Length: 480
Image (cartoon, rainbow, N blue to C red; front, side, top):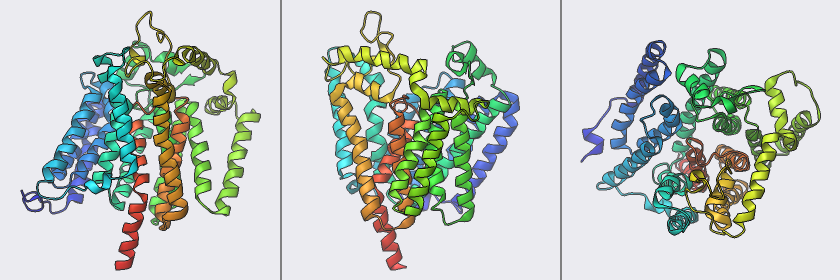
């Protein structure tokens, strides 16, 4: 089949913009008639149709579609409960692989891109979790329910990035798409704050019990179209770090301003989410970036700025009249927070029986504990605790090793190998975001949720491709 001949477009970019414009018009028309759920589903249909057509020629478009779906899927399930979020993502990932293999009948598949240590490490992690199927305390149903978010996506998303996003332009397109998605998330949160919750969100809050954690004494915690405020806040913290750093490296002044505005909007989204654990993301992220910048004029003022912000929140009461500042300040006094202390007490109880379980209690078991189980009423509400309990200290070591390997290799590449300044900045942003999310994962459960887990795994893959991008750019400059 001639992919370049039989399926042709006079201007794919025009079709894309036309689809986006059509989707926007459909959204505006349907929003006030049917609500945001139905409006959102129908508004993305022109874009989805365009992605499907483009994917037949270029499978990387399918992965862009997967990424967009990943961002919205859990929000859609709130409005259309019959949509199985996880299964939908599995089907899309399978179809993307099928497109790669189908196109491979005519064009060579870039298998060489996956021949690197990180692929071997993620495969090792997947195999380890697969072996836990034989854990005596788990069951097939529990394992199937837990293994995808725990290990499968960590293997699959980087694998697809290696196969399809192996050019520098793919990293930049990914950032552009992500910035638009972040903008949608910010706008939805602003609608909740200033326009109010819609009927479906009110049902989730006041009938299904979401108000217990989102309408509290410090005020409302806004969650946009994410599963909860913690997931939303963490995502906004990540976007704040990524796009603020990237804005310094955009050559186009309008892109600089656009990325900076996205970062500021994401910062505001972090504040109104009331997610205290997510505050660590910009602190750790910017600290890492200042070091990677290799410039004293950035490092010294940056560290002083972080110190000033820390002192402001930790040792002053300025701005406590603003509820958002008050909630963020409480993150710097965690020992005085009742929920944090309860979490520590739960972890102490887990530590008692986990000493005898180096391989954990079994994949999928922690979320499905029954009365009488040692984990019953002991929530694993952070990613690192979740990995530790289900896979044991052995699994936690493997999981952390994956992240530390990416951070160490990426840091070495930025400091000593990557020559292109813009690429240095974008990879530094990715490293900073990953480090911030890893630190936050001790306070929030994010890696096992859409969209944050797949986003971080995609960033990890881009970090691994940094030196390849640099060689591509150097070659292009030489041949120019």
